[in-house]
Length: 321
Ligand code: NDP
Image (tube, rainbow, N blue to C red; front, top):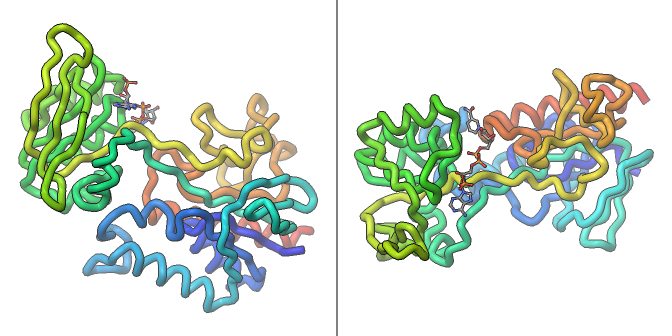
């Protein structure tokens, strides 16, 4: 029986482990399918406090991992395949190894959605990005494209327009789905050209993204294929939280982000959605941190902060037992 198991090896999971280990909780951290989390898909991290010259994602995650290890975190490599929340919480790794714990911190993150083009894979980290805030700075005074027509795409297009020479916004429908105010900002920004009814066929370039082939009004009589020259290609077609393991056990919003009780990282039981806010609906000893419960900010430093909060909440819970 463990005191605390943490699932996830992004900034939220490792920070939770640092705090929990320093509180003598002997945490076990299950690292999951993508060691280091989503951050590992970017090229350089320049906005995490404490790295004035920037840092490679691998280096930063290794620093966090070693810091957690130094205070006594045990690491388990493997993928959690099943969870049964209860007293104790039961966690299966790779279907075979069963772990039991009094407290659990879920830090399983979220994954950006991609279009599914093979060229997205080819140029991942070499012109393809799913985070303008993380990578936009590398495209100063260059030309980039953003895919999507929602609030995120509009926000990312505006963020990039402050840095770049020109921004194409590639929208598959003849209208934007984003809120009116975001639409107006994008449509009135002289640096942003909205390409309605366009889909991306493929990305091109020698060793890095240099262009994209687009199709206008695919399947219609006036269908046209044309090419744009770009240096960066940003996906903003949504994220999906990695919370499938907890569906039917914890309260989530309609997109699957875990809901937490006000002012804490404590999770709520699945049936508490109609009566949220009542402490009796708190899932005892279950806490969430990072992008799996944050559809809004999605930043490494915010995830780290919520990992700290989850560990402090877990410590308090364990002391109360
Ligand atoms: P949304 O689901 O709102 O929008 C996704 C966009 O991507 C849509 O325009 C959709 O097109 C497009 N898309 C999806 N799949 C594809 C594809 N395969 N090819 C091309 N385009 C595709 O996601 P967001 O991340 O924008 O927003 C998520 C939530 O967060 C929303 O509720 C939003 O309002 C909110 N949000 C709020 C912000 C704010 O208030 N400041 C900022 C950012 C997000 P289509 O329209 O055709 O389906």
